[in-house]
Amino acid sequence: MAHIFCVANQKGGVGKTTTSVNLAAALHQAGQRTLLVDLDPQGNATMGSAIDKRKLNRSIYHLLVGLAGLLAVRTVSPAGGYDILPANRDLAGAEIELVNLERREKRLREALAECADDYDFVIIDCPPSLSLLSINGLCAAHGVIIPMQCEYYALEGLADLVNSIKKVHAKLNRDLKIIGLLRVMFDPRVTLQQQVSAQLEGRFGDKVFSTLVPRNVRLAEAPSHGLPGVVYDPSSRGAQAYFAFAAELIERVRAF
Image 1 (cartoon, rainbow, N blue to C red):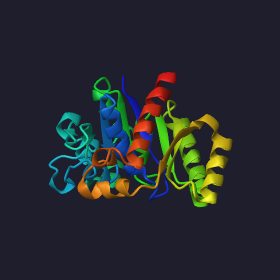
Image 2: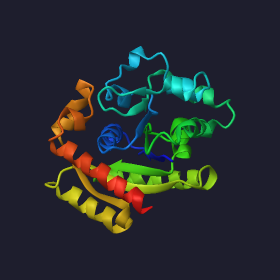
Image 3: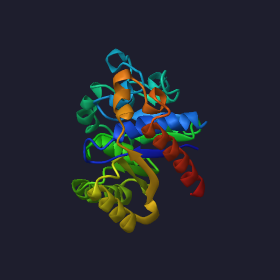
Image 4: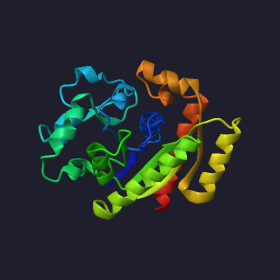
């Protein structure tokens, strides 16, 4: 039975897609059967998995609106080795079309039920807003991984996200919980980041992953080559952090 996790944050530019792609690739390299779901109309996770979103015949848009089944949409990342449900700009239209469909919040959940036994992990890359697409991701997931920078505004965004997760838990998905907070783009030389990191640990305790993902130019370069950072330069500090994060997540799941 797959463990389904959303990578979500309502604030943009906090490393959701970088985390999703590199986590999927690192889990695959750790021997875990992994599916990456790109729920963002920008399709960055798709491009970062070495798949040209402009040439897709079928995408997750077709899956959500009932025009294609999961097997017709699913493909393999030639760079990362994991399976992926790719996305492109067509997905933006799903926001409008889903409004008039039955069980609109649970379309992804019902689609993933077809392959629940095929994977150990399903990682869902959510868009940076509480849209109907994000709600589909939260309804499908068992838990939420929250990547965040250790900055003041990130703390405010975190409060909004936690409230949104509570609402989805209460009304749509009783299985949903916060798996953990991942500190990304971390620079230990910045005093404010150290202070915010300490606040997170003090408030959320063991919900904060021990792994710290540093600011790393190799992670930033990787998408321009259509590769996950852990494939582009496995020896870089950023890649090593994501390998450590994947190992920590596997151990946390075993503890559940």
